[in-house]
Length: 253
Image (cartoon, one colour):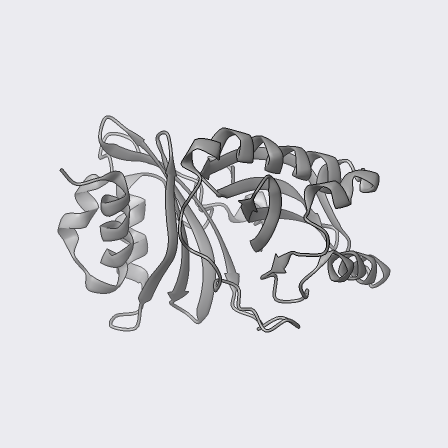
């Protein structure tokens, strides 16, 4: 039996292979699209595929995991330039009925030499999924939403922290310096709402909304948890389109 992960892999690869049979996993009765540049429904998805440049699209799935009805893919893309992104699909009755994504132009490597997608990929600690999701949710709420900096160090094992954001190096000290520097240069990051937390084992993704340099922004943050502490972080940051530019009315989240 084909698993949900396998169906998502086939669907993502269809962007470069043109395999039309992979699209059959999308519900024809109702497909809710949250990419604001793509029209709603199956017809919107096929329009998007048709608009991609022929023979120059590449999708490299680096990480993929599932949480209940959701499948999360962390990918490198080549279409209209090099991008990194997350795609999230929700299944219902064996079909994909809803999709979210966040995309960012590739940058880096960062000061510690990491790219936006390299690092550990193996899923482990399946029995700790819920505990790890709770830890990450608490971290984002405490630190990124509410600014409770006195709790910051408690979420990490000393200064051992691998960072994949293209502007920031490894370690807590570098993270703190980066936040201070961005704020001084008018590039302050503010998280307002955590919309969803998805995870499997040692990987947890948060989908959050806030502002970056004063502009409405979607923050997708992927964390790897090890022994009850945050050990590694990847992110994709995308400005949210003005409502007048939306191709569907479902909202980013």
